Amino acid sequence: MGEGVALRDSALFGLANVGNAPLAFASDDPAYPIVGIAGIAIGEVYADISGPEVVVTTIDGYLLVFGVSDLGSAGSPTIRLDLLCSLAQIGALGAHNSIYIGDHAINGTFDAGPDGRAEIYVAGSMGLRRFDTPSQP
Image (tube, rainbow, N blue to C red; front, top):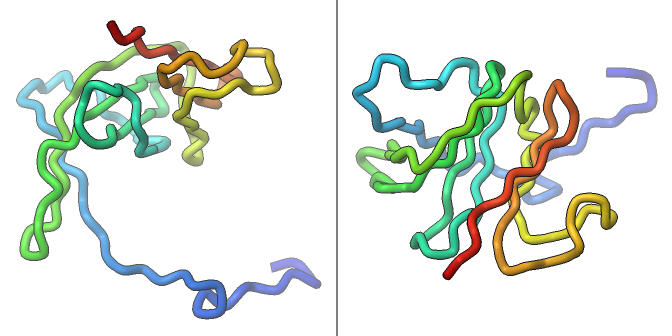
């Protein structure tokens, strides 16, 4: 570390690793587009689906949205995910977890304001991208 940079003691700031759970992506397709995961975010993408969704981005340009079908248990902590949708883009997406899920404007440049549906904002090698979810009936 550079001179003058002090590391924070995690015990003083209330951080503790309470456990880990691997993710199991549900697919029998050998061409499944999960190569080089760059970012993972959890949030409410679709209002009509119970619970949060998991957004995964890859270095080869995929944005994937998964529904959580099984949260696992203490004896088997694997979280099972089922693919809801995917979209391929040019360039890497979401490196270093640069993903934001919400219904918000970003300085008025991408959105006029909340409209009742979530957007997914992802920074990538080709700039900042916004993905809209469909309007709810």
